[in-house]
Length: 157
Image (cartoon, rainbow, N blue to C red; front, side, top):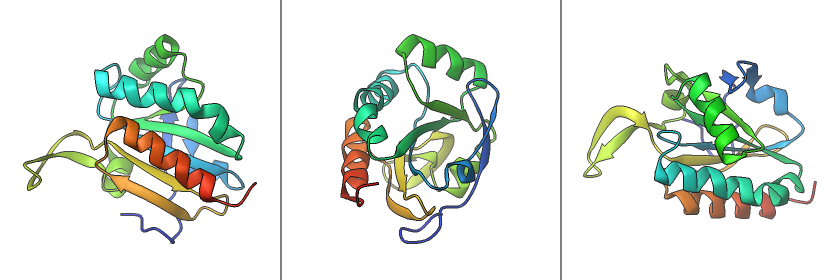
């Protein structure tokens, strides 16, 4: 699991267009990553559309947004079009990245972790690839508000 203050582990996933995206591709820019359980569900629509709505504020701080789930490339492509999302959605069908980042599994009664979907989470990475903020298990709007605040706390860039 990534640790705040340490380099964020690199990963390689396909985006909604089937193109390879690596976290290291964004070195020199800030990165907001959010994990969501399933495209086109109420909470995920809220989270993704809220990131869409604050995207200009994030982009103004030299940052990009990436959404990650275990949904297929095709599902993510259709959802991106339907919701007019201006950022990449990444497909992690084997949940390798989500596992490594401790965001795979649904907690039942805060005790038992069931391996059925991504845990709604967010991470903020600075331009040097250092993880500066994260929360595993977060409400949709809270993930947006906290990620935006973390990007705003970084020095202008």
